[in-house]
Length: 507
Ligand code: ADP
Ligand code: MG
Image (cartoon, rainbow, N blue to C red):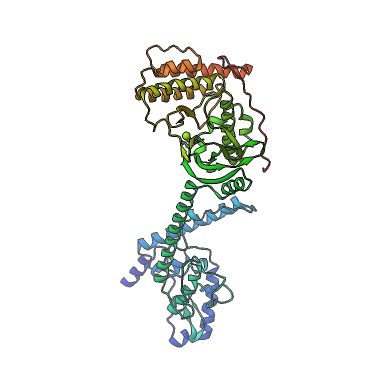
């Protein structure tokens, strides 16, 4: 009686069918029974119920364990979720040739159980596996192959071991796995899985290192296309020799070279090659200089990023040409080839002129330098119709008792929507530098700004914020005016006088 009560309590799902009578050893070994079992096995594989495995296994038939039941239900839930994902993936991809995978969102991952050999179908290399049958060999659900005495289970250590050895073929080519197959090596699942993990982490590490190396070479030197262009200049005789790098900046690399000869134009004995970097990261920040420059606005939007970099070189060439016309001391343009600008060298005997920030000058020279800079800024604004926009002691060289202006690729016209803000920044750099160097004649930033621009913005209490807001209001009014009438309110001497820019013949 007791026994029956226990039996009923054991199965919350209802009455349990009586267990089949135990069979004898002869029956177990019988071929007929094996066939029968096999058929049942086939029938079971068609079962869609994802929890079927677990429900059929011995542990689960003991339904008293809440933990097991919960696990079974969770498994069922997870697999249903995965089925749903698969359906959505299919619907999303449709017939498209490019498909996306929801694999990462799956709840049940075939590889997660690292000691299981169930994952072999996903892992196995189908190209070469001498231990593999012609057809993909999966262990049937019943868990064994063969008949009668020759039954081999899926857990057979030898078979698994050999398969694992063969699966090492899947490792990356640089991993030397040796001739495991030749010596009939059998790898346990555990050893195989740790080898697999090691192999993966090594691959990731080497990828990271490689990436770094590539990046650093790109930082320091020029890319092969640029090298070829430079080589062509030498072989065409424009340059005698390229000697070495003077400076590596964020946006450019500057080389010193000996000048050769160019048709109808004498090339200076010493020149520099300013190579604008073709990596775009730094230039992105500078879009605002060129994007709103009316001279380039039509072309900017139509160009791909590499060509935008050529625009910088072109811009520097145009600005230098204007400055030369106004007789501002600056490098003379020799040649522009794509993103390489060749210009005269400021310095002597391979030694570049020092930057104003590095040079030690007498107070008289320093005072003269200030007046020269003031005059150059006025010329730049009034005659060349330009604002330097990166003027500081870093971009002024001291050579033959004079200040020379360089680095004008970002210089813009005063009608640029932010030109006055850039001018204010230039004035601030200049004024601060000369005041720090003890030039008592150096004007304040506000006086300098008004002296350069010819605008009479009231200086008041020398409140920077107030001054800048005046500047911005002026820019805004000017911008509105330009939009309405194509004209600016405040006056600058010359209009855009650049020749039309020819597209590059090589493009
Ligand atoms: P970047 O945009 O990288 O600052 P620059 O035009 O300022 O480029 O050039 C970087 C450095 O190269 C300068 O600080 C200067 O030392 C040197 N340099 C550039 N042009 C010349 C030149 N024409 N003659 C001598 N040195 C130059
Ligand atoms: Mg510079």
